[in-house]
Each structure stands twice: as C-alpha cells, then as structure tokens.
Image (cartoon, rainbow, N blue to C red; front, side, top):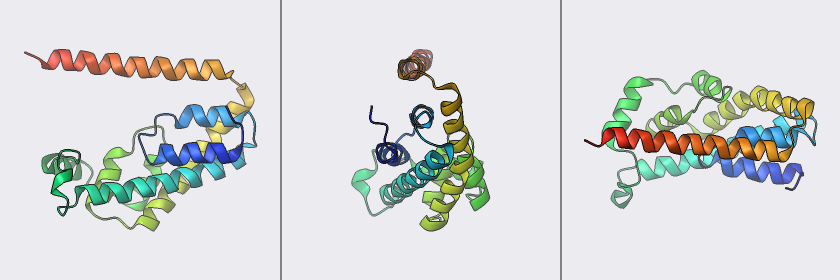
Length: 174
C-alpha cells in the first residue's frame, strides 16, 4: 500500500463519496506514517469533499426530474420517515454526527431532501471529522498495527455484516 498523504486523500475522497466503511482502517494505517494533525487535516478535507459530491449526487437522484432513477433512489415514504425521525439537518447536528463513528447517512438524506447548502454541509463534515480523524491517526501512530491486522479486521467486519444481513433476510421470509 502506498503511504503518501495524496493516496490517503484520494482514498478518503472516494470513501466520502460512497459508503465510507473503510475510513477507520485507512486512518489507522496512514497514522503510522504521518503526523496525526496532517492525517486529520488532509483526511477531513478529502472526506468532506467526497461527502459534498455524494450529497450533490443524492440530491440529483431524488429530484422528481429523474423518474428513471426511482429504482435507485430511496422511496418517498422512506424519505418522509427519515425527515420525521431527523427533523433538523442543522449544522451542529451534521458536525456532531461526523465527529462519531456512527453512520451519518440519515442526516445526509435529510440534507439532500431539504437542499441544505453544500458549503455549510461540507464545512460541518470537515470540522466534525477533524477530531475524530486526529484520534484515529494518533491511535495508528501509537499502536502501529500491522497492515495484515487492519485488513483482517476489515474482512471480519465485512463478513459479520454479511452474515447479519443474510440472517435478517432469512427471518423476513415466511
């Protein structure tokens, strides 16, 4: 694996624009090679840019102008339920959601539906990610986990997620 900050930034940009399930191992890995503040700053900026792009795409996908996207976009009922559950996609809510390992997808969906300003969204994601990314980079620097340990953890978590999904699907069938 390349240990440059540019490669990390590219990975975190792509992560921010997709499912973001490799962010933690990426930061632990690159924390071994760079100062935590550099990893946090570059990583937060890249992740925020990717998240902003994802928000733009999501906003475009759920717009009523694109009926052909209906099969890929969340249903209107799902959007309305999310908006009821998370009535405010405020700056502070977005910032706090990004400062934790918890998924921020529900708030991102609300931000897309209410057309939250992209620049404010990007700033909230950037500022929220900074302390979290710094902490992960610091852990990576202090513990210097071997790459095989990080990759094994990713595979085990992915397998656990897959097993959980298969079990849920099996329970849902009559």
